[in-house]
Each structure stands twice: as C-alpha cells, then as structure tokens.
Image 1 (cartoon, one colour):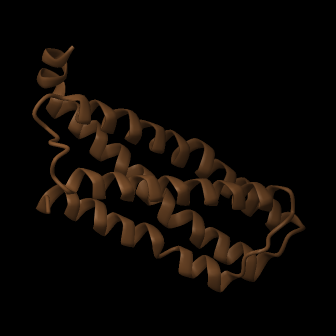
Image 2 (cartoon, one colour; image 1 turned 135 degrees about the horizontal axis):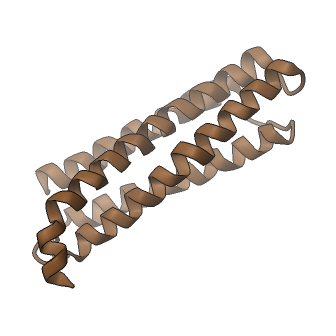
Length: 149
C-alpha cells in the first residue's frame, strides 16, 4: 500500500489542493450569502426562498463534498511514507487548523439549516466577523505546511 501511495503522491497532492480550493471558496462565500440574507432579505418570501436554495446548494453540492475530498486526500497524504514526521510541530498545528475549519463548516451547516426552517439568531455583523475565521485558519494551515515551524 505504501508503494502505491508513494507513486500516487503527486496526484493525491494535486487532488488535495483542488479540494481545498473548492472548500475554501465555499467557506468564504456562504457567510457572505448569510450576511445579505440576514440584512436584506429576511426569513420569508420569494427572495428568502431563493437565498435558502442558494445556501443549500452551495453547502450540499460544493462545500460538503469538497470538505470530504479534502479529508480523504489529506489522510492519504499523511499515510504516504516520509511525508509527515509527527515529532515536528507543524503537523499538529495543521491538524488543529483543519479541525477548527471543520468545526466552522459544521457551524455554517447549522446556520444554513436554520435559514431553511425560517430561523436565524445570528446578526449580519456576526456573520461578517465569522467570515474572517477561514482566512485566519488558512494562514495557520498554509504556513504550517510550507514553513514547517
């Protein structure tokens, strides 16, 4: 198995990067949709239904599959011999960042389901603030992997 992973490493890494890009794009965009949904649309009516559908499709068709692919390809990269030395700090900081990004993903899914039910307890300002979370986590993750501190 390790020989196969070593041979496939460049392909797995490429697929991992593409998955991460897709996941991050959705994590950046969904909170922005929610800001506008909260501040301009409200929780009922035709425009609410449109926003709820857009949020649902972004979350279910792009964001969740991209997260799952990111995890699968990431685990395959970690399983590739010689790629990760767990005695270093960087794999742990990257893992913490990815776990936090996954928690943010789950939080967004819950907000999306609330909008589907016509419920929302978060303000537009709070969504704007939360929209910064994936950027900060991305910085941690990217520098963990590239600088390997």
